[in-house]
Amino acid sequence: MIGKPKRADGGERWCEKIAFPLVNTGTKPVTVGTVTFGTHIIGALGIDWDTRTSTHKLPLPLAPGARRTASYRICVDAWRVPLGMHLDTKDVSFDWTPRPDDKP
Image 1 (tube, one colour):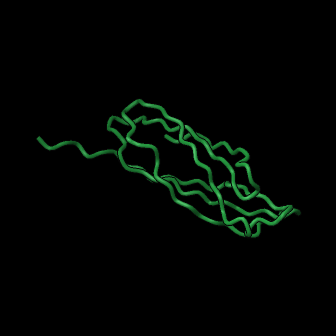
Image 2: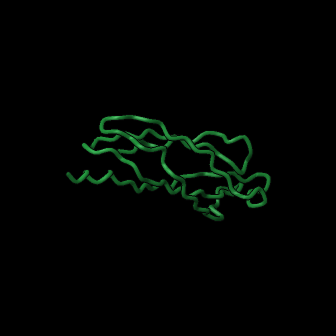
C-alpha cells in the first residue's frame, strides 16, 4: 500500500521534494518496484505549461508488514521553469511486485 504523497520545497524553483509512506500489507516480501512522477510546470497565472515524467526505483526490499518512507528530490531542467513559474508533482504511479515463492 502506498500512502498519500507529500510535497515540499526542493531548494530551487525547478526542484521539489516528494515523500510518501510504503506499507507491505501482503504476505510476501516486495523486492522489485518503481515510482513514476508526473511533474507539472505551472506558470505565474496558474496555467499548466508542460508535464515531465521521471521514473525511480522504490527503496526495497520491504518485508510483509513492514513500513518505510520513500523520499525523492524531483528536478527538471532549470530553463524549463523561468522566474514566476513553479513545479507541481501531482501524478504519482507505482509498480511493484512481491518475490515469487521459493520452489522446494
